Length: 385
Image (tube, rainbow, N blue to C red; front, side):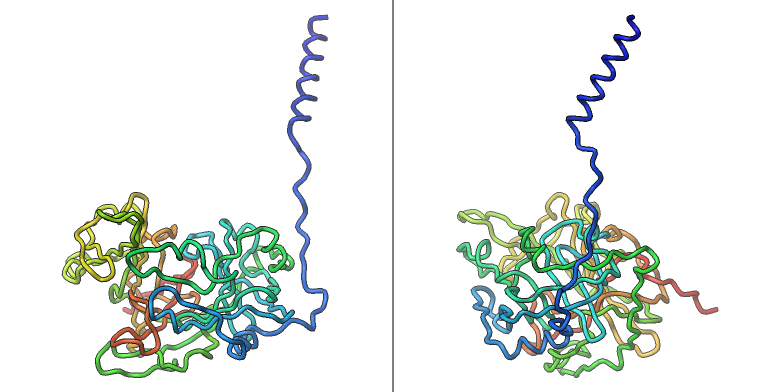
């Protein structure tokens, strides 16, 4: 009898436990695509469409951002592309990059763990009507309207301003981003476009680095695509990026402080990792600047990694390519192979520390840059005998 009572008690507990928790299977993923495929246009066509629309960007920040051209798309059109980057390894954040046969573009989505929803190699469709398309610093991006909130807080220094913000509202994301069929592991691969740097459009200037991107780069449709550059070697650091907010004495709102390293320090302590992760950054005393004015030495805030732009040389041509890596990437603290190596990554532009581009100021022209997605994009080649 006692055994029967114990069994009854266990059965009752099991029923209560099952009632408290939902053991239903998760909702099945249902692929979606436009009901009218005639509305799909190429990414190249979308980019060119921007220049027929009036510029709605009203800069409130730094002067060089006045070169931005942005507009809300009024037409009921879609673009279709395969995902070439994700945030799994932390070198891309709040964005996915997609490409079709014509070009590539950045889609800004304010959600972490995007790789759980949008997998590399998967086809997605972006409903453009109501979204903002922008050309900023030589690159195109899609997002919500311009940043009018946080950045509009009065400050003693000019804040940066951006023509788009990440799409954050779940219903808005669901309305504009249509995910096609999920891909299996074997279908995730997208063949990168093989490029050689000596075939890229560049020009020479007398008072800056040797090569620069010319002013007519707005229709370089290779930008934003997955590319491969063979037979390169690491030759040094070009730039690194570290910023944080600090309320200075006498101020009521925080100011944006930038961190830098002296050239002498870099010569004696070269950065041989892809970036500075939080552990490595915490060991360094940086020069701190407010609006280009030196205000003393600072350590990076606890837990902060710093992005680094490393320079690689194409061995056969001597041309240079920059590789930008976030300090929050999983591989930020990994040592860069000595080479030779092949690199795969998303092609974009590097605009130096101050962000100027296309001829605004001496020595501040942009140059080509790639961002690798993970260490599988680094192919170590056998050394010559």
